[in-house]
Length: 221
Image 1 (cartoon, rainbow, N blue to C red):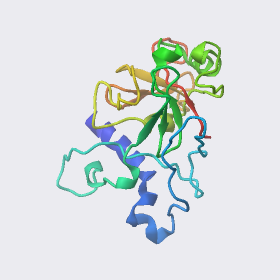
Image 2 (image 1 turned 90 degrees about the vertical axis):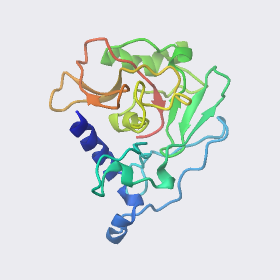
Image 3 (image 1 turned 120 degrees about the vertical axis):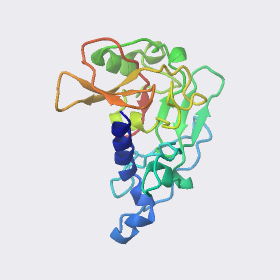
Image 4 (image 1 turned 45 degrees about the horizontal axis):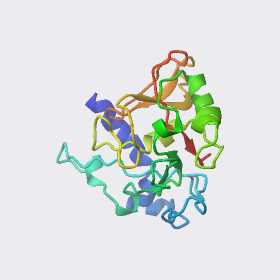
């Protein structure tokens, strides 16, 4: 299991390497400044989550423990520019949203408040985000909520934490269980990619078996 987690974290790191000097020689560097810190729900805007080179700017994984003296593990990369940073807008507990200041994505802070705290099949999960969130598909004045892609869901995992492996200050009522993405597992089409927020692992449960949770997002591709 540890080997799988290390592999996942190394894959995640590949999306961040455009921020490191190792890729400067290749010319793959960020072409624009990072997103401004979110301040107000009425003025917040976000891009597609991709920079102009088509690279998705994932936050750092949060993994700070060192398991080997050999350089190259996740512990050895702690750039300040990609440390997770979130802002809660409308922080009164009602219709609150969490903005990821690295990716620009906007997440529902509290699924209980949004009425989507149950377990779902894949189809019902997509319907919950698109049509049922907030009672009628509108939450915090927005009606374009959706089920996140797997890379978006992975981006809010904090690998330094377990049970749940997420910052619960900004993501309230997160269950230490699997959360569904919108992405089919192409090697087994009847299943869907999901993230387990007990330790950040990725799995592929059946699309038709209710047993996973949802956290809706807006913005991105």
